[in-house]
Length: 492
Image (cartoon, rainbow, N blue to C red; front, side, top):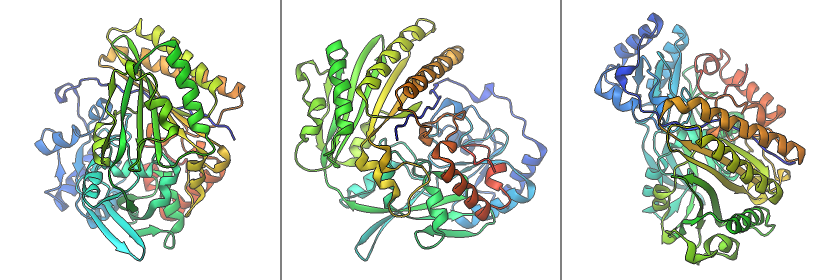
């Protein structure tokens, strides 16, 4: 099955101050916050307090920072969360759930005039061995850079985010970036709407365990994720930057397609390839890793060895996972997945050039605009059906895919509509092109998707029905559907 998903989102770095925002929470929400404060006076913060402002500004995007909850609730235990959920259910209090706060669009993990639950204090990591397995027990308030740093010291690793600043909870429950990652999700600790605390794994609550692999915030509040760890020492990786030339574009179009569709794909190799417009210039950026001690394999040579004299920067080195996670480019935005096809890849790049050139002439400022290719060879998509499966709807017969990601950074809010329209038009044209070539599918990667994108529906009818059934079983009153507006809902 060929596939292309579209997500219409851009990153805006609009500078907004607290003084410019009006606050006016409803009486009901004030009662919720007041009751929470009466129960837990030390972990509820209100507007204009130091702790409130600190939490608010810990969100990654200006879109999230511009939203003012009536209060922040910062629990330290599952029992505190259970008590809060009981109150919210009784009072019909709207709330949001924040792990690392790296969600892109406004309202995904924050809520205007509601209660925002900040899970930052669930920040412990413990490594335990059981039989022939090593498990990393990770609090969802941790960020991947912290996790990698602690595991590096023990010669271990777990699959996670490619950038150290991303939170553990949101990325894992949103689908991660590779479906094989879920094979290593050992168990999840979840506080349900009823206040019950459950351990979801392959034998206890297996349907909830599967639903959480891509089901996001629809079933409960996850506080801990136990991931199977594996031995990992230092390895080769880094970033190579080269200037645009027509010859280089032709080379990399073929290289990305060949790498993605290689039937003998080396599972230890990783590539993220980005085409960037910045400060009036076009650049190619190859982020490459090879998690073995020997040098890069031939499969990465088209990216590491191409015209070395033209390389603007080459940071390839022998280092550890935490180092690479902290130095990787941080770029999230619109995305889509296609089967590897040099014809489509070339047309996407051409259309991207046209879109950027036309749009920047209309703007009041310089912007950074990029198109990133993240290959998903079949050897990765086939893992989606193993060890309990997941909710994403990705399977081996989807074939080798490429996840495409568009990222735009800007400051001036008067440019919002121009950029949003340009990105929407770009994806509309890509949709049409992919359909003509037989390469279209509705799957969207949740963690990159815009709020307008039907992400859950893109998992396929069978998975949607499954997720809705799990929701009705574990949240029969629909607390996480009705009182948590952020994220992607199940339509129940």
